[in-house]
Every structure is written in structure tokens, then in C-alpha cells.
Image (cartoon, rainbow, N blue to C red):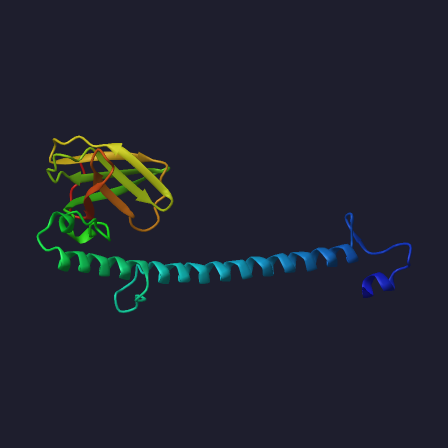
Length: 191
């Protein structure tokens, strides 16, 4: 504390109510806390990687042979081979959710109206069980009732800040399951 040492003992350097010694102590505490946060973030990323390896929700070539997914796949293969054309083989649940590529697609387009307002319009894919339109943009997740009818329908959404492209626009059934995924078509005219 060269600054304090150069001053008379009765008048240490003061910044507001803080002395240089107190500032130094707070700096040391803050540095230690920042290191704790950095260490915790590193530990979290390592634990997430371990969890992914244990779960095995990775490409087959990098999946660990003793992961949960690998064991489920082995179980499926064993049941199907041991009990072909038997009811037990037909009742095996999916290991992975329905592949997004196998879901029907519908065309949509959007325009940012400003002030947190977004307008979307979509070509009705003609799915009888579609009752809900689901939108995701960043951390915002919104749903609107969907009524079939017009070939192209429009919706207005509030509370959305657009960054780049719209993340997700889906049609869902009454149970909330995705039954069709949107694909942006910039040539789809606004209604």
C-alpha cells in the first residue's frame, strides 16, 4: 500500500467510504469469486459432456457401447429377433422422437411489424387434426389457436424481437404434439 504509506497515518487514501486496503480486499474477493464461476462453468461443461456420453444421444460412430441409447437399441434388436411377428415386438416404444424430416411441411412467410409485433402467414396444409400454431423465437414461445379454412392464413404475434430468421413455426394437435413443421417461402405473398 504505497499510496497509504506515502500519506500521514491519520489520513489514509479514501475513495468515498473505501480505503485502499478495503478496495484491495474487495478486489481479491471479487477475483476469487470470478475464478469460482469460471471453474463452475468448466465443470458444468464437463458434466454435460459426460451426461451426453452416458445417455448416448450422439451419432452411432461416437456413441459409447454402454450408453443408455446403445443398450436400448440392443434391447430393441433382441426383442425383434427373439419374438418376430409377436405382439411384444409391436409394442416397443420409439427410442427417438419422430424424425423431423418425416413430418409434413407447410410453407409460411413472416414480416417484422416493429414494436415487438410479428406477422406470419401460412399455406394451410390441410391437416384435419391441426388445432394450434406454435411459434418460437429466441426465448419466446407462443401458441395461437389454428382454424383451418382459408388457403392462406395470417396471424399477428406480440412480444417478439426478431433476430435473423424465425426459429420455429409448427402446427400441433390437441395433445400438443407437432404434426407439421413450417418452411419459410419468401415468395409466399402476404395476406
